[in-house]
Length: 147
Image (cartoon, rainbow, N blue to C red; front, side, top):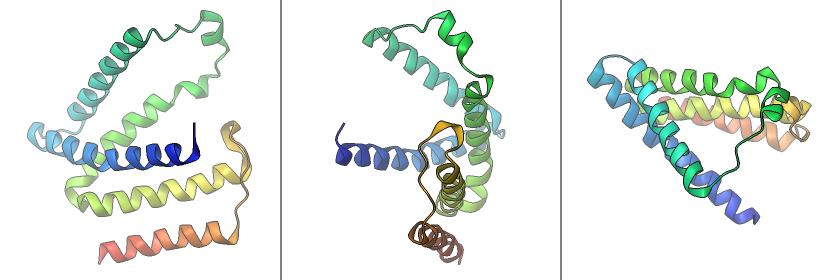
């Protein structure tokens, strides 16, 4: 896949998250509970992925492959549930802009550590002064957005 297309897909994925947050937050307000919108979000996503897998005829993983997958690699669904539920709780209180300023800053700080040490098997990308400056600018952005 071309680099420009990958960057565009990343931009689109990022643009989807605030829309998802605003919609889920609204459902949370309607139901007066953050857990139902999170469950609904994951159920709809699961059904959509199942339909795609069937239509695209994505091969089913073998039992051997599933057994070889380390237990830690099964936790992203749990992390996603915590993330979505947190966003449902936070967005009505902070607004979409500040919520995502904080989320992006948190993502950048952890991403720097993951890249620096090659955690979870990702290629090592050492922290540089420019990367640190970028993270500091995100923190400055949060301060400005909050004002």
